[in-house]
Image (cartoon, rainbow, N blue to C red; front, side, top):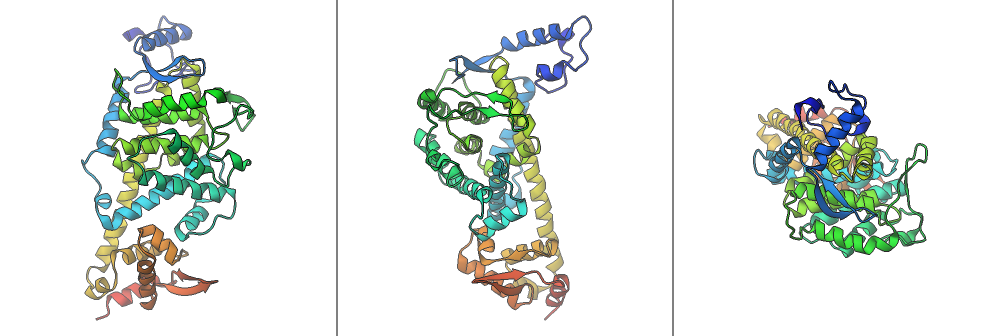
Length: 425
């Protein structure tokens, strides 16, 4: 693109909606500027095997700044450089994994309307409670789906796997229970509308085309050899886009599309992807997420808008993970330092019990149960029960009964009790 028309925000793939408000280059009207930009982009378009409902291919272009983002994601989500010790250490790895699975399950469901709070949802998942409403059922289903992907991430993406994934995600959450785990029918009028004013945003392809479109999607997801290389991260993002565009289900399309993104990424070796939550970022700006879809569909089938936005989401998710790990690692180090001078205390507590007490010091009203401890550390019921019982025996948690369940509360003077225990000989 010539220097005369290159007056664009750095490292942004700008749409007309934004460009028309920017200062234009001298000698150009905004429409002339936009036309010049469009002509330059079209010359670099790569046609994809994914088609719109009229049979025209979707397109993609890769500006240099997007290649830089891909390089950084390769380094941070698939490589072995500067891997956080908390991820490589088996003692803490499972705890971080469970946290990320829960976070994605909760926020992906909230994007689709689940209204329960983070605190209520985490308590349900950690303690193995039965969901009490549809919102909690959506979250539990999402959690099961993320576990399902983790257990099957080496399998190919198939028609049957997509249907099974949808069934896991939507069971007991749809108005029509028969719509769980099946494609939408021709008599089911499905459109995507803006919830604020009911404006029609997207009309998906005909139901009669779904089987063929899913076949093409699966071939693409499974990296069927083609003449042109498509970067694995972009492939996963485009699978996310295509499933949502096809809208093959009556409901649950967004949840299924995001879950497929994780599946394709994990299948292609991005092992660290299971520790991040893209929906946490998407939920902060759902309108931008929706616009990325619309721009791709309405502007020359240019998926670059959606790909660029999702690359940002992945990068931000990785940064959030590293910040979280740094914060939690510091808490663990501080707890270790605080207790280091007492051999007696170290002999009483294992790393899981130390984690409970570190958490308890920051959350004085938390209630712990055997099931919540078991799920947080992915340990057996007996190991979890033994951990909490010993903490209670040493006066560091207070045991109570609720129905048939033992609960362990944080004593008001936990810090003082730890000091007393630390200095015993």
